[in-house]
Length: 223
Ligand code: C5P
Image 1: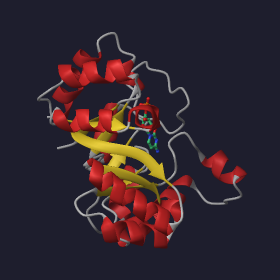
Image 2: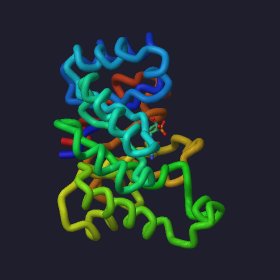
Image 3: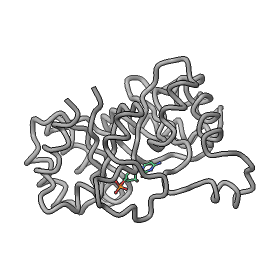
């Protein structure tokens, strides 16, 4: 069954209120730059204390030794999931896998805010599906646990990689919600149909009139 991961792209007060209201729900909470830079352990400990899985979305992109040290620190924080850009290179991923312990390492393929025209402007003459599949294959072969991609590529990855892995899908919009800065957007039903294992949702939940109610509605669709 797919899991819901709520992106805590909020201020500290909103984040702690959400965590308190949702105690006991089967949720993953994602902490990214916004809260982590300002609140560090105060927010990651809060997620763990309330009994949720912690997804640390720091999207490492660095040399192998620096990535390795970052993974070790994420382990100390008790992160359950951690993101690393696959374009950090094979050696960086190998170093990360060597020390990962129980953390599930997720390789970021092509950010969901980018499309084929962005690949072209970076000088890459390749379709987005080929680009994402090549990176995802590499990451899984090297021992990463999952891949972050858009819902548009999940099916291609599930068919093209003959090893089980976690498909993490951000950039999900509920009916009528604007895409905003995201380009490769899918709706909830499409993400599930394509085979997403973890649905990452931020603004469609956080900007709802009642985020807790919205989460409850989404959870019902996952059962
Ligand atoms: O608000 P929205 O639902 O677009 O938020 C998506 C979340 O997923 C953000 O926290 C963003 O940082 C994260 N994310 C993403 N695309 C990726 C990886 C992570 O949108 N490729």
